[in-house]
Length: 391
View 1 (cartoon, rainbow, N blue to C red):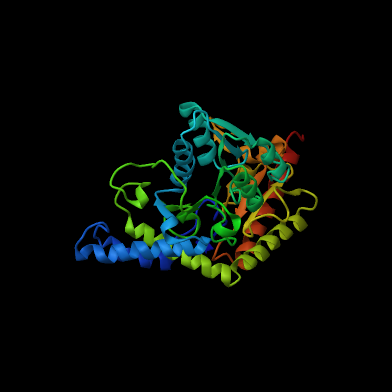
View 2 (tube, rainbow, N blue to C red):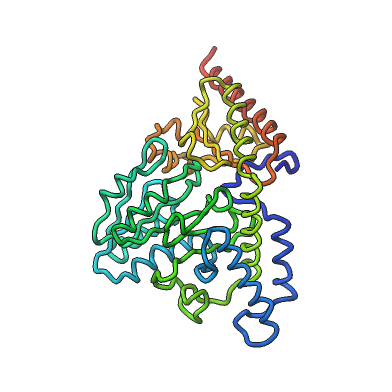
């Protein structure tokens, strides 16, 4: 999307709100304001809308509507899945398995569970492509393993984990399997039945709904300790009067995402992504490094490093492109992305990483504009560095 000369290539961070989503949710902020739990007619429309939204989210992921629990964020959904499963298991020293490139919402929850509840946590390594080996999971599973949590798609590299294979291993040993599908939902087909997962996270602002709404799929029969206690909303797992407007937004967004999947939008984005990669590689021969698996990636995501060019400097020199680096800044010093470090990338390459993520309204013109800006910025930075120290 080009807005005021800015090319937006940061859809993995957050997506714009689709106008159709905004239009659908607005009446529930004004006219249909009732509490869906009330017994009078002002509750009827909100209650119906909440039920419809649950159906729409379920339809996107192959679930049944009662298995969808609305939450306030993906981080909260992950907390409900991990903490809820561990505490409901009631074991004296439960075991949880995750992997090194998970989102911090999962990794930090695991650390908290270890600190506060004595949970033993195993963090599996990944290979140079960012993939978890099935054999590593199989070796780590024990009789005490309560839960395995492995994401569907990495937020930085777009790498797709072999969820179906990993879930089968976990369930064969009696462990629950949770999948954070925040980046995958709407970008690749999801089917909780085919994947045979027990818990799956979907996030609104990654699929053109507003921030502040997400959902957790909870397979029928899976016991979880609630994340919020109170009036019994959301199957008793997340008390508090539901935000009907945001739930409607997520439902409509899920319906639109299903339509995108059915009409070939991912294939169009893959073509644009590969065109962008090709333009950069051709103009900067031998210097553009792809970070992550070549084939097992989200169709919209390109994570690259350009030799000798820090990612933060590249984006600063290309202000017409809105994108992200994987590095973090602490007291003025940048540190490499933990995801790329876990994949074994050297610090220089990790600090050079830039994530370019396309979306629903990305066009060929966007790709061309972004490529020209990034190529120009890279050449300028290399030239400036080559002049340093010259008389």
